[in-house]
Length: 112
Length: 108
Image (cartoon, rainbow over all chains, first blue to last red; front, side, top):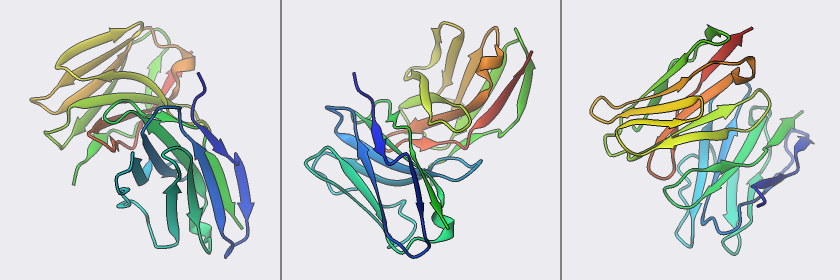
């Protein structure tokens, strides 16, 4: 079946602009996660959604970052007033709660 | 602070040898553990998961879990150059806690 999809695959934006990154999880998966990975670094947890529960936002690095998940499916990660240090690959993953996570191909964000 | 620790490497092994990747975790309440492989420029890909103490084998891969020692390992038998990648260990509950990964290089 279809895996996790993300769009766009690449995004180049100017410093100070807002960007939106989209994630379509695997159908039926109730848990959805966002991570960030800078070049040569590990995965940095950002936010986690599970069903209709309040999201775990403990990994969001600043209030410029926000995310929502509509209808328990598609999620959008928004970064306002982008900074150069926001440049990274943003990865989305989905799962059944407590089970293995499957990752999308990621969105490479470059802030110039 | 729940942590998963891995040696960053690089771990270099000759083709055909056994590669041994290790991981320790701090949360004694962790029930499940996962190994992911990440090729350069790609997203992590699930290789194996293990929930019970002992060994779990899948083809050339064996995952080992020792909950008393809070230790997880991944053995890759008959290592191939195509196994060269970064291997991420993850554990805990939801959301998973990921280690920073061990870079494996298999030399032909």
